[in-house]
Image 1 (cartoon, one colour):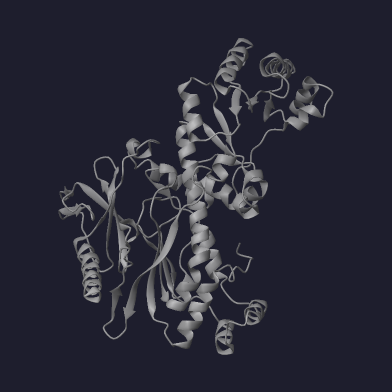
Image 2 (cartoon, helix red, strand yellow):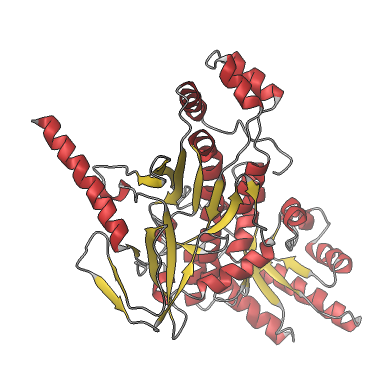
Length: 490
């Protein structure tokens, strides 16, 4: 992505608004928040991902001669504005929650502080990258949780919605907990493990199944996973696999990583029967892997049925997040800088839908943990000028049902500031970890959640509370709006 100029990967109205600001000489410094309103797939949390691609995009943000010429051809833009675009670069600040972090609705995953023309342009591409990868990383974490420690392999390239979705979806799936991907380009780009077996066509291209298995075992003796359901799983595939394993053992070939793959049929029944046959033949450590339209619900069900599968290949339902194909992130103006008074003026979006009312102001996110066990208690949104201490008592309250309050005694909790500086004055000040390092971060993050938050049905909700000052600002703005509307109606 760092080699691609994606500057025109934006919505037209971002450019027409930019020209409006340009013509009116209005380029005030503003704060935009990128956040989402509800967790995908009915989850109790989400996983933040995609920041590295946002960084690459912002670093390379510029209008080429071809871009300028295309915009000129639209007959919408004046020459002075097009001249301005020739030297356009991002000069603002960006703060973000690191990739792999567990996140919750209505808190900024990314905060952009920049002149409004620059901040406005970032919206579509930034949301595209964060929304997509956060969606897939979240789905992957759920699938991996269902597998209870078994390895999950991402096998979805052929079903992904385009090349980029396959590549960056694989990246996000690795962040969410997968142990490998079938996507070789993703493996090369992100230095992650690539894994795979063989297709039914391999078996069908040989005169018989046994010859196909023998040939494959000769080629890949240290990674010999044989697909056993081409003709008849229990009467042909598994017996032939066992015969090949016996021949390898008799020939003195170490059986370091070997086993079978099931891709159809009753996976619970077939895996249990295959396990019995493999154990009886003296191969108790043979892997039984499975694919076939798997998702977290089917894997959990198979586990409950006593399936003996220990390795899972998940494709379509993971790479597309089939049950919830959109993350729903939004990008909203939160504050405008008042140069005369040297302060940020909070802005709020009012809506008839309460969940669409935004949290105003230039904000920070304080994550609160139980000091005794490290479990996550909740997140506290505050104005950027506020400070909190672990040595002082803390009262947090639900911003909607304000009577719901939690008192935290000094010394019983720890605080962590979530938003980290990524760009300062247009220069990147952040180094992205490797994908495998982010994967490790994600696993540690997930361990801070209660099991009740991770369950698939009716998960426990982690609350995002407002500081008293931010709460007062928010409802003062709403009161002013309501008063204005009442006066307009009179």
